[in-house]
Image 1 (cartoon, rainbow, N blue to C red):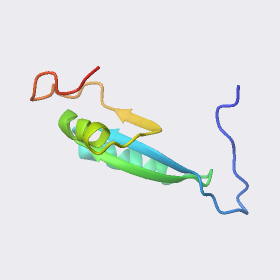
Image 2 (image 1 turned 180 degrees about the vertical axis):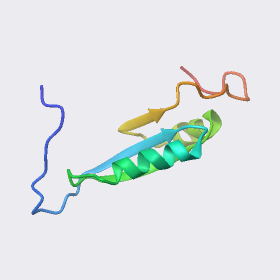
Image 3 (image 1 turned 90 degrees about the vertical axis):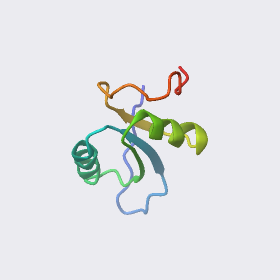
Length: 87
């Protein structure tokens, strides 16, 4: 099973990866972005940030965006609106 493919560094990469980062601590998100900026594979990373579950819900459902990778804080405080994020 092939998990990822390296890109010839002599060519410009056109592969874009959509990343959603959900965390209520902005320094954590900045840390993820800093680590991902050392992207040696040549991918273009488009990051969307959400600092609570309501903004994550908006990014996914209301903005009708799809993401390839999601960094999710598993200890995120509960949503303010009951049942605002469908399972």
